[in-house]
Length: 580
Image 1 (cartoon, rainbow, N blue to C red):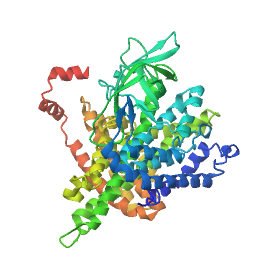
Image 2 (cartoon, rainbow, N blue to C red):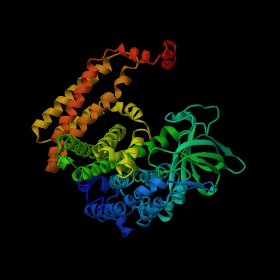
Image 3 (cartoon, helix red, strand yellow):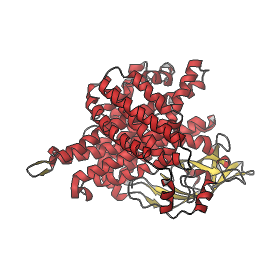
Image 4 (cartoon, helix red, strand yellow):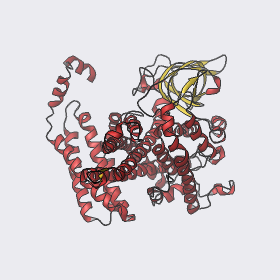
């Protein structure tokens, strides 16, 4: 199997984006670490070379270890032994390979044993690992928890916990969900009480659907304030597995991502450490953690989509029907081409979003060392605004597209794709969760609609229009799409009717996403002509999709919302109660 980094030239292309130079300079503090660490880069070119070498190692591990293990991991899965989660044999091999290569804690500062990488190469590694095995990507990707400890933990906590990631290869988990608090995290009930005698916090309660539950280091959301029932009573805690103070009640039996253990956990007077300040657990710390997780699911979704596309291409080139390989039939090559251009668009949005997150985060780090100049403060706020609305956007569109692409890939395989003889059967099952966990598509739309109503998406679209110097035909199509988007958005905003905005939220967000991805592909084509065909074909698809959404909203009678509720026999009293 080919190296996963080398067989995807797009990674190098996105590393060469002009803004990456600024990200690296800020991240490396003008390369001052080179005086302390022999593996720290001396300049921008040295940093890029380092990223590419590491990504090349990840590509080899994906090709030689993770991908070959994927089938056996899916069949074996994890199990519970002596109240502890034990990974499948292949999962342990995968993690050991990455640990031995020094790839646990990639983005942590060097003082904690990390590589001090920006998010961009880290997210690229995540995409490759997800392409190799989506379930394993969850286990590896939860090192995001280390970033949260680094961002919000005390100096003593950082010194004690963070070196363990690279040195010991510890695993991590974000322990948020409960039986009665799924997406509604402000309803969390697990109790955290301070033990005055022992001078520590104790956790008691149940958590459910915990990805990689029973990890070495867990970040736990718990209710620390008595007589509260909302987000203001929640705090975040670190629980260390060495305390052996929780019960792994059972492992969930799942449709897909079977190598990733999903646990129900019972905490019984479990000792824990407060992260940051009380009452900021959900409104600040978990939101930061969830944004990282959503970016991770965006990368996972693109990786799954790429895996599905490659399986479809391989099968279509080999399968002959009616005297020729099926890739030569228009019905098939249309599907394949649409997969390819959609992946090009998604990958462009993924790494644009990552760059926005990167630059806003590195400015936050710089703030701890020195005061920012006025221009820097304004730039940090601008990129933070973009990161806040682009993150739910990439999670929404990439997860939905990964499901569609996996569906079409299986369709191209025909009946054989429904069997376990081909990887697409597993990939198809793995794709389904991406639009559900870390916030469903419907919740991502609610988060992303701020980009519509505040004009952040529109302002960025206009900025892209300025940056495009050629491609007048495609630019004109995108301008027409933008005018329609602007017009229909204003109509929705101006319509004063209960639930009307919420009803059309996803359509508006997806319209914005299509325009943004169209512009990104055109901009890509001006740096590398290979994106020209993808830009032209994607914009053709996006125009038809946006027109359909526009027409639906424009012709929608607001009173029909009542009909939708009526079809479900929602009574008037229930509607009034819901609105109150």
